Image (cartoon, rainbow, N blue to C red; front, side, top):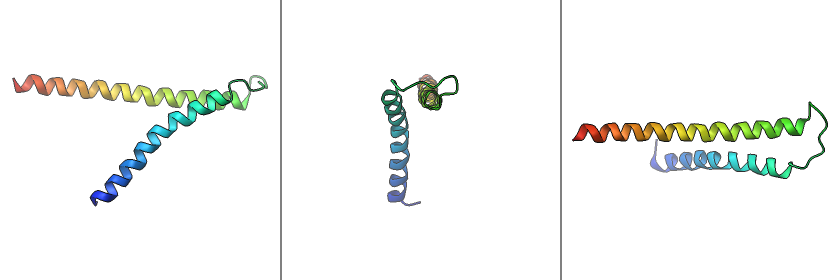
Length: 80
């Protein structure tokens, strides 16, 4: 795989990772004062789905950051 193609793919993935929470937040804020239609309100269902997606993405980032820190500290302790 060429370096240019790899950079393009990385840019697209990074854009998607950044755009997903922003689009979800925009939807939540723009529909916060909607006319609620009851227990089966489709807008509320979409708002919950957007909120859950953002939460899962952030949880994954936090867990991966913790794993990276553990690996780095293990490597640092092995080098001494």
